[in-house]
Length: 435
Image (cartoon, rainbow, N blue to C red; front, side, top):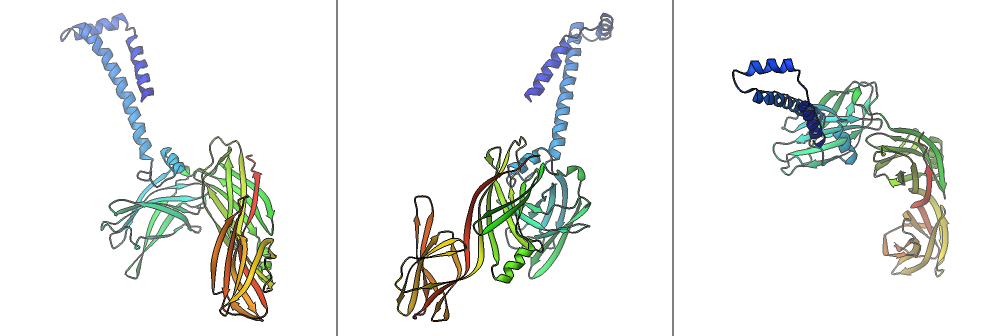
């Protein structure tokens, strides 16, 4: 508004300085003599022009504002993150405004979508006139079906109003093919053990698709200890940034399965650093298919003025088949063992009231997820874990001491560790090229 006021003031000054031709001014005076003094009419003439200019600029300004707000998705400010709010302010969403009402009166309105290289975001509201919108009968968004294939939901979050009559949702789906024109949002409502299917059809406006801001191959394999991860690529779009990677290809996966050394990833911990600042983490996942074990990690969108990009690989947490047997002698304290390059200290073995107890110490992140005590050749399952104690060392490492209870005693003892969960530290940083 300050800029508009300056513009109007400048236009008024220009109008005030206009030199009207004498003959034109004379004719104008004569035409106005019959009603009022010429001086008054002269002033009114300039005032009318100024008023017209003001009206022109204000109407033009308001028209643009109305058109601008008409492109925005309203009512989602408290559900959007900062990046989505900014995109919404810029009018990057595609309004849809289509609804479906189930037989029980529950309605779903697809207000709009955003599409880019990484995802399709569906903005929709669920309304229940009975004021019970928070109940489990809310519709389940199963997929978005296109001509080429179906696109699965990935994640979603929403906000319920105070009256419990409406939930505002943002749901992420797989990015649709560029060849899709008409899509169908599929949803199901289950009530009284009966399922009702609903559908909202809509067309994608190609002019609203936002593409990507950075798409780069990384192609680096990082190894540490008995583990490795392969970083494949990064895809940054206006709504989010995704790192794609692989832990095992299908041959490695099959080999470990045959050898009884299966690997089950739990978490790959990484930080994305843009222009020296950490990019907000948003989520991720691991999948196993015919291509092997793959993972993806999601972050917020990258800054517009991107000058440097780094990936800090912190650690890799996994659960692994082990099949390692440790012979334990009664009375022998602080026995050391190494499994998958992870240290395990057997503190002591003792018997009490017909049971055997094994106390051991590891780093806090190491968990023996499946362990058996072999007593005189007989496999005895774990009854419980007791006497858990944590100790923090000066270097920050946390040691965890606990005692395993097995309900049998004997003469010869072997601790069979069959599965183990642990975190392998990496702490390595790589630069990602921006070309």
